[in-house]
Length: 359
Image (cartoon, rainbow, N blue to C red; front, side):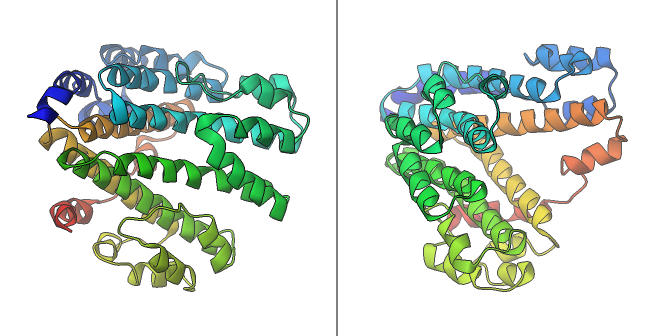
């Protein structure tokens, strides 16, 4: 009863927002729709500004604009929560600030001007916590990290980045060190949501962390050719089905195929038809989305339902970027569908959802 009282208004807001998600049929229509048809669909879903792509000369700026409606939805959900639930949602909003932080760090290390850097930043208000002016005005990366250490949400990230910087003056390693600390913080906040309310939330966050850790491990080992210890060091220090020792053992293996074969259930069956890291990434991404769809449809009166909506809204905007970018480049529809993962079969993942919930 307490969960019903706590999340009744929140649940109602999630239901209203979920009705605005683009359906699969509408996404498919957008791939071949005229400008007028696209505008009609996007207007109905509160995304009309996205139609400006066809007259927008700066694709990167247009893509940054797509974050605005998602942050607006997030603000609606934040206002309907309190305590640890609100802290979790606000912390998730800082995921979009990470893009700004990485852009500033890359710009500082490659000598971009402040004016150019500022144009690359996403407007994440009302959740801005980064001291953007101080970071942009820092003389060097060390001063930048000192400013960052004074910011509540980024203390751990700044300290980890400083350690990496002291060990190696490497933009790649510094960039790669930022994400893991953020997701470790997300995991901690999900664990703090206790009782039955937190079960589905831990499932969703766990799927995110397992996916990111596995994909990063494969990329670091077999694309960037990092040593097993280096690859493991750059992973998220939080674990669900893929434990720390398991990831360390997997990092020692010599091929993508061997890693997949040594994964615990249900991953080998889920990934049995994949042949490369890109296919692994897409399959696991669809896995998280399918879990989110299930939570959104079947659960009520818990924080996970809102988080599931945010994950699916993020999927929608990702697909929208792909569709409109593909149309801007005059790509044939089937290539756009391939880029969205619509041509691949993800049935094995869907069939494993019940089994995963019970494990």
